[in-house]
Image: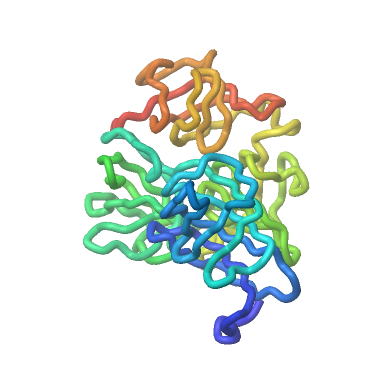
Length: 328
């Protein structure tokens, strides 16, 4: 790693951080690279042109005419792009593209939907408004614990979606909680990205970059961690980088049958026995439903699920609670 002042135009760098609503990145780690490296960029897709087979990430134009594409391309979708060579005249020729699931701000949530999210504050609130890992949040009427809210703060937010903004009723500023130990902060979710470079392993969980290099694995191992793995992570914040001290894998052989809770938004809905929540495949055909029924399930519905993953990595739900903006 090098000091920021040591970077020069033309240097090859790797940037870790949280993608913001304007498609910029709130950086938590910048590494200058030497030698040959596969160019890679992650961001939200815009200006999709299926005829020309191009789109943009920020101001960078992506040519995917010869690329292998995994998932469906759509404006607003988070994508990871790999290329063989660096951009030429601000055009990156992609060799492979992978799409990620939509977050709370990417699908048609019904107004009044209950939401709970964890993420990084892109800036301090302005007239009560801020963006948390890409989701617009209004904290003007919220109870804020362990504040204040500043840029880079790691937040847990609870509230109701009004159609365009999460109206927070409670916000916890995780890193400034009094008496917090080195493993006080927690994250739950599926690993959406995983990189191994420079002796460090970085995983993206629920939109937050996590350094899992030195973590203790109580179930499974670092070698078993993969994109799609469902994890429970405990750790602490160093600046805006989440440093994991303990990781539990909730999928795979070592976690088969282990019961846990999972919350998020329904996507890729096929049937009650085949849908996803935060990228995790769910079978709720034998589940008990609260505040709704199996007929309530649809893309965009927010749910809280309790269950266990089977050997195939499917979360077999024992209980599904439909969230509709109730108090808590």
